[in-house]
Length: 360
Ligand SMILES: NC(=O)c1ccc[n+]([C@@H]2O[C@H](COP(=O)([O-])OP(=O)(O)OC[C@H]3O[C@@H](n4cnc5c(N)ncnc54)[C@H](OP(=O)(O)O)[C@@H]3O)[C@@H](O)[C@H]2O)c1
Image 1: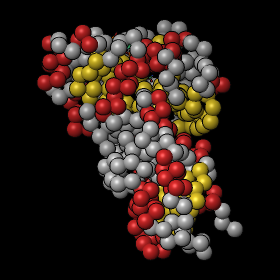
Image 2 (image 1 turned 180 degrees about the vertical axis):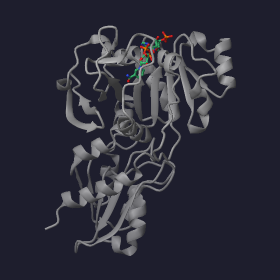
Image 3 (image 1 turned 90 degrees about the vertical axis):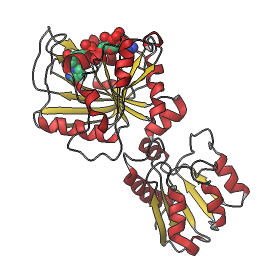
Image 4 (image 1 turned 135 degrees about the vertical axis):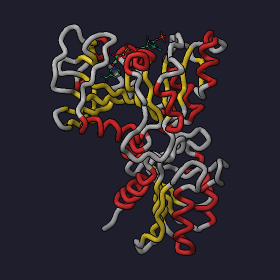
């Protein structure tokens, strides 16, 4: 017998088709099933501003939606955003039952969709495959509940946990197969961030290369002293997405800020002692997920601020020795600090990915 869980898994699969395209909106999938168990509509939300998954699935089902069950990976919305409320369409379509994986954390919804449907005699169940639904949209959930992006710290290290051969020395650690995995992560997130030290030493492009990416990639540089040169290579790649330099309010009127702004860079202020305020400032650029790629100092500051949600470590089979720059400035860090750990080989390198235990 096909269960609610089976149909919800199908809706989750459908939702993933929007991966990398929907921010700042969540990934959502919806499936319409008749009382006989026939799937008569199935759709995903494609991008912000376009119809919601529920509306598309109901449109596909047409008259066959009457008396059906609608499975959706997120509580249907009840507010007038860029499209009308889904709950009105659900009631108008004559849907008998709605099964939602999880409540929408958007303060404009948060249970309001469920209450509206129940008030209109629709039977509602919430909580089927909720953990998967939350994971699918962890950027959206973090943005809604903590008003900051979901932060993935990505670092390449040597076997002895060093990120560079010496302070200020550009050090290539990973192999082309590992670089490809890193590029795939760049294709999925909304933004990359680095510290000004990395820009000055490595002069990276910070673009997603050799992977398909549907939306522009925001590149952020944390730079309280505003040392980013207008000639930096990242500034020359604005066609790939906006470059945002986060600095202190005192720097906003400086000549350096004016020169960067002239080149098309967005210079924004943050409280330099509070890194989270910098990441929050990126919400202006619709950033729900952020890859913190370096360098050592900025990653240590983010770790100490307890805002790292996941870690991606790329470990190369080299030893850099005691002159090398230690990961997290030598702070105690082991894989035991992570949960949901995945580890795999990539050419000669080992990749370890996991979520951070919030109690570190
Ligand atoms: N192995 C890897 O995965 C990897 C990745 C990237 C870089 N790297 C290496 O790391 C080295 C660069 O690292 P780095 O530590 O010198 O530079 P960094 O972390 O890229 O940048 C450090 C700068 O960030 C600025 N910053 C802004 N807000 C900050 C905050 N809240 N806390 C701390 N700093 C803040 C500071 O300048 P202000 O005080 O002016 O703001 C600081 O000097 C290079 O050798 C590079 O090759 C390695």
